[in-house]
Length: 579
Image (cartoon, rainbow, N blue to C red; front, top):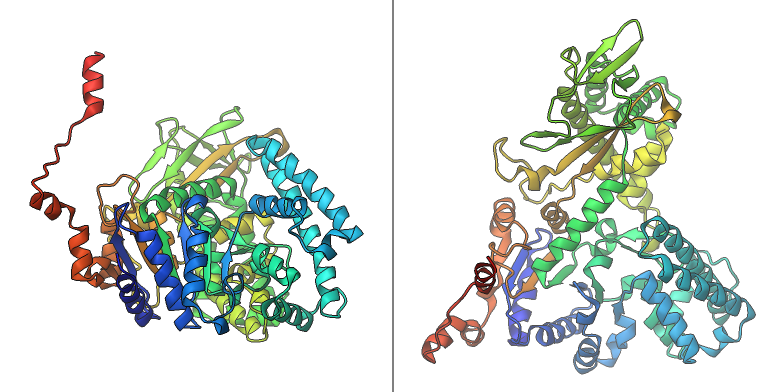
């Protein structure tokens, strides 16, 4: 492959902003894809100072750091900055700490850091917590606790070296916005052992100066932590990806990682459905009672949709007796589940769940009895739909608030994300942390104002890709003896919807030997993506030179060389011989 092939692809994608596109290219192993894309990205970045690309690969071994470094040194002028000043290698928390320890042991860390008593103290603590994390990370019960302890220890280490950095720029901690800017300028413009190490180890000290950001799929689907802050920011909702190019190396293999994370997140985030509905109902009442800050109240109550949703909530609360406690007839702690998909409901016991209000007990009886005055299985999708519409409305109002707050910010790392804004609003309404997490998982609106299709026909075979599924699990506990938890988990971020969300903000170039082959089991649902994107889903082969197209035409090359390929099902022969 040739650099000019990728140059044409990048140029076309960049010219389409803000209507971003998904471009896919089949690039078989051995065609020089990895080497050539590194050359093209570095050359394009050197010639376009406002260009930013995320190079996302499924494995750390495919970072090709040496290839990128050689390409940058070859194509970038001295005025463009050094490799570590303009290219970021983003590592996981564990890998970052491993690098810190390795640099310390090999005396690669700046001498002023190693000689500082405060840095030595937190380094010792960091090393201890890394050992604990590595010992427990494969044990589900302890892995999260040990990871959280390691995260805090790494933040304490960053705080300690921030003191040393502040001393280098003749400031004292804590650094305000101006102080952080001065420190970032020092790291970006000065060349010495301290700035070299910081740029290499902590590119997040000023990630917005980086034009090429190299990371794994696992890292990209999660978050990064700005150097001066304790908590991470999701890439998906951070301003840094806006109008960037995302190159997905081994495109089709990224789907499984996105899917695994989405399922894991959905199962971790759950809240009782009835309590969640009631919390939102009380939140609407707070708006009416004028007990919330006027800045918050006015942006909601002035909208017609507010009264529509408020009235719909009242009707649902009355129709399904949602102000009463629901309690199952069964005495077991785990009383079963209902999985609601766009096409059907799956029930653990095989029989429908029914519910009625017992006026004597002042309680809703939930079970599989014949009486079903409250139509329980209709209630689940009705309440879910209400929650989804409400969170979409809240998210739109949060976006207004986010824009207002960020207009006052000069530091990108301090910018309020849409999740921050939503969290602030839900918190003011009195919702619990777990309830907020559930609503945030529901509220991600993956439709686009820039032409991506957002609705699907009711009988479409792709409604799962569009809507995901909901899990409702009935749980009893002696600590809530008078009610049954109807724990709701929502799996809404299907891999295809995740891609569409990214395309609201950035272009995507997907590379793989089988990127456009729908028959590959691990690939995204290309038919669904094509229907959603229309002309904004592009085959990269159109931008290849005739020479490259001939090089990739293996069928034609085999025919010219009289080479015949015969496919055999070896596994079937193994089964037949062992029957």
